[in-house]
Structures are given as structure tokens and as C-alpha cells.
Image (tube, rainbow, N blue to C red; front, side, top):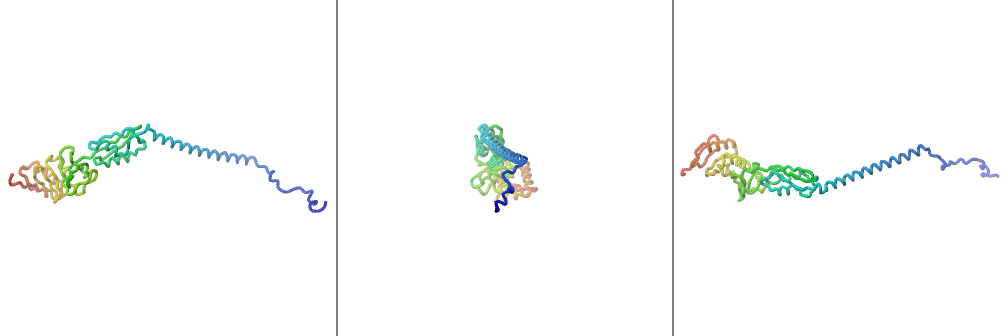
Length: 272
């Protein structure tokens, strides 16, 4: 046979036999191990996510369980504020999840009530909430613009003075109408309120009113006037008034001038 085909007929085929290449068993085992490890990691992550979801669901079910609902809200320490008003202000109601109640917010809301100075809100599982309050003390009455209100030592309006509890209060005469309950009076009234509070019990029942205009002065129950001038040396003026009231014959007293507390001046009525 002649020609190209005849020339290469007896030579071996040198092309690579790709289908016949053998894979090392160690590499095959390694690939299988890697795949299995990746599968285990995916399974572990899935189980973790399922566990978290199950715990979250269980937590929601526990929080919303009727067993942990608010069954009662007790109130202690309130003399002037109705218990139902305190319960309503707290924002916590019967049937609410007791573990979800925001106790700090509830206490702050109760402290916004006019009479309440401090409030503490606690829970007692499975279903009780307790509100304990400390109320403010009324020290005087502020009257002005046809309205009279009770105030504490800091000038916070507590309530209308109608039906004021306890012993008679010294009245502070204001030019403007006092604000509504829960709000403070103006700063210029606070000195007069402090003075009224100090003179309510000592001397007891002697002072009827404290006036600011045109200057600081006391109106006594028996009709006499005590002139104090400005608010300087107020401690000395209060002490001088108490001393004169206790030791001096007050019959027919018209004016007691204590603008200079170390030199009191008494003026008596001519006809008495």
C-alpha cells in the first residue's frame, strides 16, 4: 500500500485517552468529607435558627398567657388622690401582660398627678401590680382672680381650696388667677407661700393672709397689720414677729412695723 495512509498504518495512536484517567481515592474521599462537613454546618445553622424561633414563640406565648395577666392593681399611701385615678394614670390595666408593664413609665405618669410627690410601681407574679405613693403637703392657699387653690411649699397647685382638708390655712393674696392643679405658681409668689407655711402653726391661728403688693405684709386674724417691707432678713423678721406676738400686749394693735427687725415699731388704734 502506498501513500500517506499506508505510511502511518503501523504506528501507535499517541492521542491522550481522557476517559481512561484514574482519580486518586484519597482525593475522592476528601471531596466527600468536605461535602459532608458543609452539610453538617448547614444543618447546625438550621437547627440553631429553629431553636431561636421556638424560644421566641415560647416567650411570646408565656408573656401573653392569661396566667401572667394583671389581675389586680393595689394602691397605697394616697389620702387625697382617688385610687382609681392613680390606676388610670399608671397606664396599666387589668388583663395586660404583667411582664410587659413598663414600671418606670407608670411611676412617672403617676407622679404627674397634682398631689403625688413620689411613686413606686412594682410587680408581684403571677398577676399583681402595686403602686405606692407619697403625697405632697398643702401649706397655704393662694387666692386671686376669684379663685383659691391649695399649694405645697414649692408652689405646686394641688387642688381647689373648697373643702380644704385639715386646719385653716394662711392665705396668700395674688393679683393673677392661680394656675390649674399640677402646675406651679409664679416665682414671685413662692416667698409668700413659704412665709405662710412657716406662720401657719407658729404662732398658731394668728395670721390670716400674706400680701405681696405693694410690699410684703401680714394681715392678722384680729385685724392688725404687720409690715415686713421686702424679703430681706426674712428669718429675723419672722422671729421678731413671734417674739412680739408672744410677749407684747396686742390689744388695740393697728400696725406692727418690722421692716427693721431689730427695731419693731407698734402703732395702736386710738379708739378701741
